[in-house]
Structures are given as structure tokens and as C-alpha cells.
Image 1 (cartoon, rainbow, N blue to C red):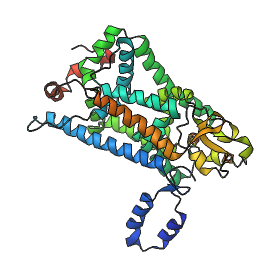
Image 2: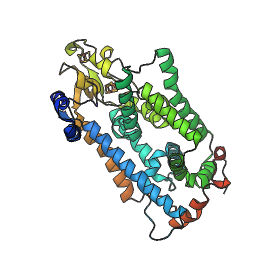
Image 3: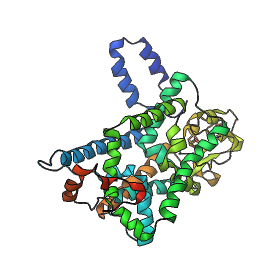
Image 4: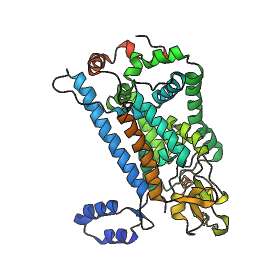
Length: 373
Ligand code: SF4
Ligand code: SF4
């Protein structure tokens, strides 16, 4: 069984015999009791938790923008800073600004904080941001699982296609590192951070989804179809948020570790791994694609063969332990940023009230980074 599938086999059998009117009730019970090998599927609940938070942020952010678009009458809603989590380029700009100038970018500080926390969690527990936190990863998994149930294909591309496609996200990362880290002078960086475009980049990003034109519909529709056909298409091949954590994850000392003498060479881990990693052929999984989902551990019939652990199987991490570590990093990091005043933007309500109604004016275009006030 792959991660994410239900283990309530007897319940599934009972469902088939139940009258159709009872089906919704049984289905709710199955979701609430979601378990893997008799233990709570903490990864699933972590993904549900963060996806719920992001949906709430999206709704609050839409209310905030809509308030200023419709005349700003009444009490302004608060702006949820977490919306910046979907601005990885702003996060990269912020990290460079932090390194060069020693201060945290105060236009989109939450973008820098979230990218920083994704990197910290990757240093600790492989690419756990993708597997335990990211709502896009969760949706991508759900779309891929639905696709597999229908077309019955594991979605593994031949290596000759898989390798070049996997390199696309690193080429995108290389381009942004070249453009931002290597090419941008400190003064150009400061000017871009303070530019009108950057100040409303989060609103532009939201409008990509709320005011779709035919081009954005084509892009999104194509990604859904591709994700339906090839499980995890976006995360594996394209996501810029996955590339840097993937590279940093090589530093993680916690990895899937296989005890060769306990392994019975059943191949179940290879089949279960959504990242297509040949776990059965490895002593330690170093791959940048491993997101600590623990699907391989879950299917392994030998209790001693696979663990998420330090070298020599020291400090084995359970699903609950991984949940505490990953959630702890994000909750503590965001909490500290909020308490120390490094979470909310310095853009005032007055400034938003002037900018938002004119967001389609030419000064709010990107212009390849050369934006003038
Ligand atoms: S190696 Fe194991 S933990 Fe890593 S991605 Fe594959 S199944 Fe998940
Ligand atoms: S699932 Fe466990 S026993 Fe089977 S090949 Fe993988 S590590 Fe070995």
C-alpha cells in the first residue's frame, strides 16, 4: 500500500454491503480514522492542516484586496502575511538582501521567512517541506493518486525523459540565482524590492488565480492534466520551491536507511516510492527527490529493514516524530518572526489603498525587473 491509501480493508468491504444512504457517513468515518499500519497517518493530517491554513489565508487575502478594490468602505480586513509564502522569488531576493545588507526585507518578510524555514526543514529532515507542509504538493499527490486509480499506470517516465525533465526545475533555479544573486548589484536589489511591481507581487499572484484569462487557464489546465497522467509532475519537474530545498537536503543527516541483513529483497519499497527511488538497491537514500514521506517504511514487511534515521540507524524517527520536527520548525519560526516584528509587511493601509485600485497600470508591470517608480 502506498502512503496516503487507507488501511481499513474490512471497512471497505462493509461499505460495499451498506445501503447507499449510509455511504456518506461511512466515508466520513473512514477519513477521520485514516491510519497506516494501525498508526495515525500524521503526514496526511499535517498536509490537511497546512492546506487548511493556506485556504484560509487565500480567503482573507482576497477579502483584503477586494476591500480596496471596492472603495474601501468600513473597517479594513487584516492582510494575512502568509500569502507571501507563494512568492519564492521574493524569498530569494530577501535572502540575498539579508546576506548583503544584514537586514530582513520588510516589503515581503514572510516570503523570506517561509523559504528560510523550508531550507531549515530540508537540512533537518530531507525535503520534508514538500512532503509534509506544501499544499501544492498535497494537491499534486491527490491529483496523481486519482489519475493512477483511473489509468492504472504508475506514471514513471523512462530515464531518458525523466532526467532531462527533472533538471528543468534546477535550470529555473540556476537562472534565478544567476539573475538575482550574481547579476543584481546591492543598489539594483534595493530598488527592485522597493519597486511598485514588487510591492504588489502578492496581489498579482492572487489575481493569476482569481482573474484567469485563457492563457492562465491553459497553463493551469495543462498542469492538472499532466499531473493526472504523471504523478507529481509539477513537484518533480517544475516547482521552483522544490529545487533549492532539494539541493540543501543533501546536507540532511536523517535519511531513509536500509539494513541490508534484514531486507528480504521483496521490492515493495521500490514500488511504493512516489519519487521512484530504487530504495531496495541503496543502503542510504541520498536522493534530492526524497521528501521523507515514509511510504517505503510503511510497506516494508521486515520491521528492521527500513528506517528514517541517522547513519548506522541511530535516532530512528517515527511518523509522529517527523510531524513534531517539521511542524515545530515552521510554527516556531513563524511565531518568532511574528513576536519580533519580522512577519508583517511595512506597507501601510494607506499605501495599499492608493496602489490596489491602479494595479493594472503600467508601473505595476514586471518589465524584466527594470521597474521604475
Ligand atoms: S525513499 Fe521513502 S521516504 Fe523517500 S520519497 Fe521514497 S518512499 Fe518517500
Ligand atoms: S520493502 Fe523492506 S524488505 Fe522489501 S526490499 Fe524494501 S527494504 Fe527490503
